[in-house]
Image (tube, rainbow, N blue to C red; front, side):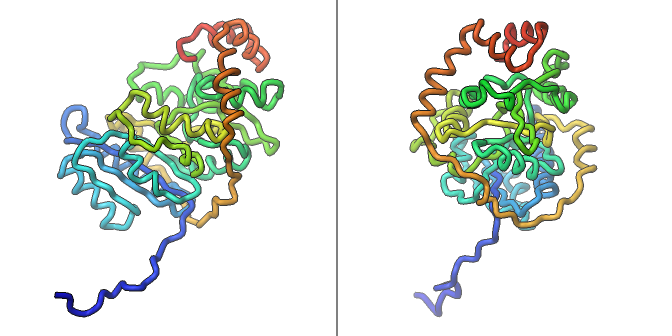
Length: 346
């Protein structure tokens, strides 16, 4: 029997204003062995976003088959209203399917998708917005510049700027950050030839962006995800899942994959090192001001442009002589040409 009337009947939904959502999939089955520091790393990831974002971002966390003990810890972020959304799945549905649970209904203009082991630095959000404003065709921007991404799903950029000095190799802005990433994935060091120059775009307003990026952390324009496959991913991790759901949709709307010229985040891996904790302690609390990111230029799909850049022009770079010609035209000297055209990172 119903007694009385529900106090929320006919009440309008109150929505806090935000133009930016951050989605974080996380899987932590325990805190032993490989996962010993995993929750501490994840906690720093979320806390660094809360400290350093320039606008009131909404954070969505999707716990994909994590243990009950871990889920209880994650829920503490909800108790303090630090995050907007927590989704817990008891079965292990995989990284991409976890993201899709939130992504398919996200309405914010900008959507950042990040792994749970990323430490965000001050001004990362503003730096990304600057790139979006400087390059209207940008579809995804990462706050972490990477080495040798000049041919990583960037054919549309090469096609547009092949005869323009807007696109050229320039000195790496922050070689120490490239070294830090290499170590985070288990490499002892990064050779000098991997961190001397990188392919970049320079806008009329003198904003420089790296060409290409890695999808462990990146911010997308919302319209990119209108190109998502209708079905869920078949893979828990790997396969073609990240290409189909995070990479190809950018290209299908004619978007460029770029990264900030300087480094604004670190990949931590599964081990929390002293330098990461010290870096986190130095972060300043950013003032949160609402920014209407709807003014950022929108993208529209173009099947013709996609076909020309991805199915025709891209194949030219499989020809070594053409690749050398293109790289030389964009500023590489003889030694650099040898390093870039005889590398496994192309």
